[in-house]
Length: 244
Image 1 (tube, helix red, strand yellow):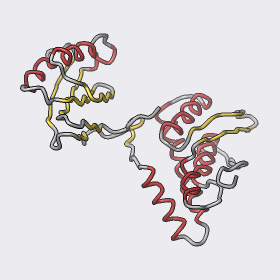
Image 2 (image 1 turned 30 degrees about the vertical axis):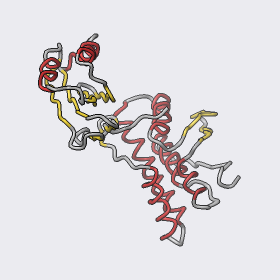
Image 3 (image 1 turned 90 degrees about the vertical axis):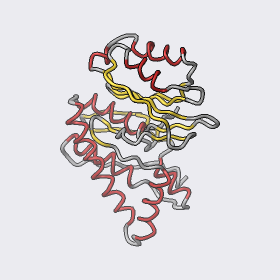
Image 4 (image 1 turned 45 degrees about the vertical axis):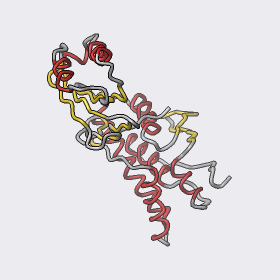
């Protein structure tokens, strides 16, 4: 299963329009608001292409090719209970649209999204330009990232260690590093074992013909646990897909 993290939609042969809806805070816990909006789409025979929802805002991409009066639909949606404001914007490019003002965030902190191809360029550039210790550089970057992740999670989640780790493990997979499966976890004394499938760093190294263990991912895990437990933690990679 995969999801697109930014509001983007395509509609071959159609004409995309974007509906931006802002709700009052009460809508967050109200029942039937989405149903009322969907019924308006049914009434006007409007295909819904994609829906993106965040707190009290919603972005709906529709195929408006059969709609003559977008303002009339806008007026109907505005009458739905708990709707504070609504705008319908035709796309500059009929078959493709990106809503540029929805800044991606995790727990209130802005997220910068990298495609795998961009991350590949970054990792390969470090290997190609740093002839001495490229793995050490990737490891140091990973350590800093892991510590930063932990600090951000601690401030935003306000959970105990065990629950924070459960969410962090899910975020590791959800943000694209790889599918992480916890095999063993004991915090006192510390002994944790993970299996990571489809690891993005290992995939990049394998495609480049580098038979090496991960450095960035190992650094992230090590940095996270070191910051979490407030002491140095060593992360050891015992089996590696690139080394067979």
